[in-house]
Length: 92
Image (cartoon, rainbow, N blue to C red; front, top):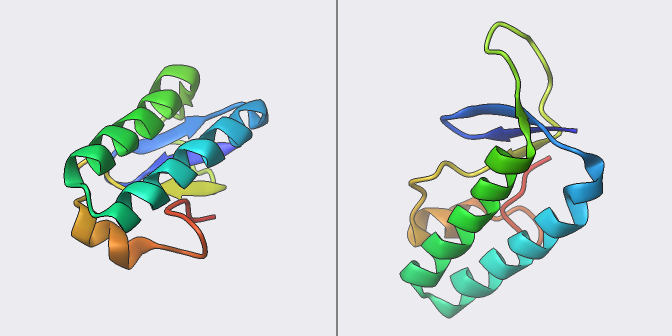
């Protein structure tokens, strides 16, 4: 599966990590609902770290369609409220 981190790049990630990614997305939903910017930043950072650490960067010269798009690392709580698609921030 190809995951894009907005403003950063793409990573090839094992589909086996999709459940963990969804758990982290659910955590983000809760922090946005709770209105806690610090908790939101921490949860977003954890999600992005999973992709960066477990994923393999896709070369910038490769043209690959992203299966999922995650918010940029500097996304604020207010911005996240406008990014929701369905039940989370992951766009696919």
